[in-house]
Image (tube, rainbow over all chains, first blue to last red; front, side, top):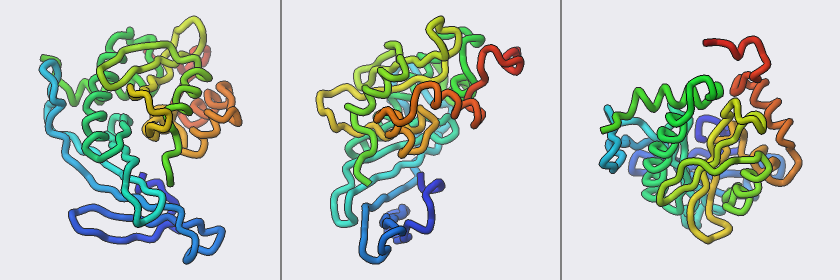
Length: 138
Length: 106
């Protein structure tokens, strides 16, 4: 998400703990006055799927973003992304989004594996290839 | 920057795209979205979080739809049709139509 935001609408605010925070303005109005919200982001190394049946061949990089209505409010809308596979998950906290991402990675792997290759479209084919490269079924 | 796609909108999107119930886990139910009713080509797989809250965040769905947050919301609000969504996927290389010679890539 951070890579795709329109930079002119965001004010970059470096924060501690290795993340980045952006306050979001409506630049078509009065940027200094109208704050629409805030987003925060950090990279996370996913080491395990916490599953007896599936495990990761190696840690994968995930990006976690939290959103808030105003800079001062609690970040209660989180999305964790596994960009290489184009897979993401939502949560009410960063931890929940990451846990949900683990769940969805396994779910998509099962779902796409259940179809013959000829029935998979461009994206599911690509996603399954990344998942097969990343996951071992035990 | 409140959540763009709530659970309520996510369910509308699944219905509009004619998603078919697919794999599920304790936390998520997935829906397979096919190109047509004969289910010859899987376009994507959408996931909905279990739980009863209608406003539960589903912003991850924009990635599953290959859309911007704005257009994902437009899809739920009927300003973007299923056919327009498919046209958009083809234009952006996320989908090759089954009747396109390029689909026979082996």
